[in-house]
Length: 235
Image (cartoon, rainbow, N blue to C red):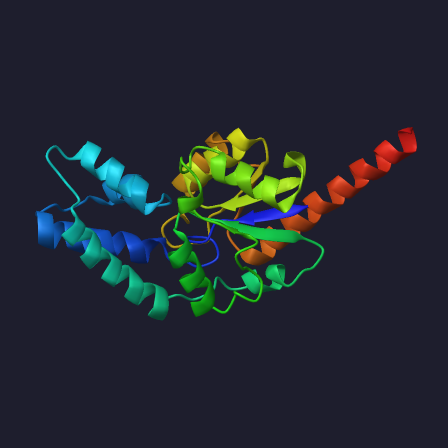
């Protein structure tokens, strides 16, 4: 069984850090103040590349230029190196050798490896089992990054489960044909309305703690083993 982890909002409660960096710069540099719903829709759970596309499409005349990106990257870099904390209980799952595990994130390679190092999980995740936005043509909700992860990790799609926090991530996992587990324990997602949104998107499980998610992963692994035994008996 392959567990495919998103990073921001799952491994770390960090989506709010990056979104706030965007909001601060949009206000100071462009005079744009985002509402909470706009912040959620335009900045949470997608790659930096797709944030630019959505913002420029949403606000007439807005252009995210190189100077803006430089200032944004400086803010992000500080956050990646100083502000990240692992979600409680997640490392217990990383250490479970019963699962094959990888990361598939909307961040680029530099961001991913910097974040992994900051929170000390580069002992579990390295260049062989991390898949980033700069490795694919299309970001989530396109399934490309999940399909790439399954292919590179050499695990059948029906034995994969993606752990995601965002609607785009859940949609991408379902389009890929794999299980989609919604983690709603992050600060920006832990609401009844967001849970209902995850249900509407077809999430195969919704979890607000890592201990609950762990039990869900163990159950899925047991189901796969039982199905495998049944197939052997029929032969």
